[in-house]
Structure formats: C-alpha cells, structure tokens
Image 1 (tube, rainbow, N blue to C red):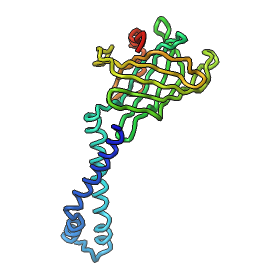
Image 2: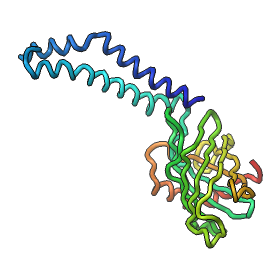
Image 3: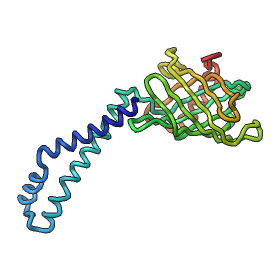
Image 4: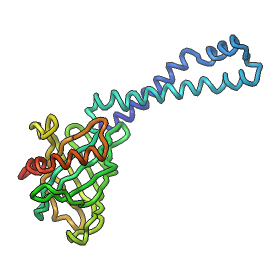
Length: 235
C-alpha cells in the first residue's frame, strides 16, 4: 500500500511540475529570448529551438522534481529502509549463519540486489555459504518481508541444493543494537524441499548512505560474533 501511494505521489508531482511550467507559457518566453538574440521564428534555428526547448524544459523539471522527492523527501517521510544490512540467524538444523544484504526501498518497490551468507565458526571465522537476492520484497511500515532465492556455494559439503527459495520476515526490536539505534528480529523459512528448515533472525542496518559491499563485509567481520549472540531464542 505504501509503495502504491509513493508511485501515485511521484506521478502527481511530475504532472504538477509540468502544469506549472505550462502555466507560464514557456514557448512565448523562449520565442522572445530567441528574437532578442537574433533568431526569430522565421529562421530554421529559431523555429527548431522554439519547438524543442519548451517540451525539454518541462520534461527536465518534472524529472528533477520526481528525483528530489524519490531520493530526498520520500525516504524521510516513508522512513525508507534502503542501505546495507547485516544479519545473523540460527537454523533448526543448528547451523549458525551471518551475512549482509543491500536493500533498495523506493516509491517504485523494494528489493535486495546483493545478499551474501557465511557460516560462522565458534571463533568467529567466516566461510562462504552462498549469495542471494530478493526481487520480491515488501517494506511496509514496521515490517520487512523478503522472498529470496539462494545460490549455494557449498551445496555438496552442507548437503543442500544449489538453488532454493525462502522467506525472511523482520520487525523492529526496539532494543539498542550492536552498532545502530535498534535491531530487527524475525524468522526465516526455507521453502519447497527445505520446508523443515527455519529459525530466528537478527538484523541491523550498517549503512544508510555511503556504504558498499567491501565496507559492509569489513563491518560484518568485526561484528559477526556479537550479531550471532543477539539472535533470539524465538522471534
């Protein structure tokens, strides 16, 4: 519902910006400017510019207003959840996993384009578990739901399929996080042939702006043990 409202607002702002430009009759202003500089509509350059420039101005202004709303105002009003997140989980088969993912939350939708999972040893050493993405995701209010596709790096060693799907659902915990104002808790559920694999999840947003995969991984290495300790016994 929030995403639908965001799309409607983006379109409304774009149309309002275009209407505002049309109200001041830009074609007359452009024509007058060209005449004053020696390019009357009777010349080829003047006629071409007078026809092309006004629509280009309307399009540029509408795009600028839409971008300002989408990347500046909307994240604040909607409490956007974009950024690099770190997580830890404990599965019903007793595997301990930590990882990171990049969440994109905009008026046009919510998705994870880069997710990575690692096994964590008792000493905190990380071993590649696999990579995943979630093209189907929902970020509405105080809940995030991700329908992910996992590509396992070590399917033979851990006796799991090379590709499978699952679901993650998290909500704010409202307790101070390891490195953020508060953490998020929830559950994950593998689906289809792995329907018996599930468990609690703990997440924190590491970077809202300015992060990248390298910085997120470095922070994960530093905080992996602490994140694993914060996984609840039940969500």
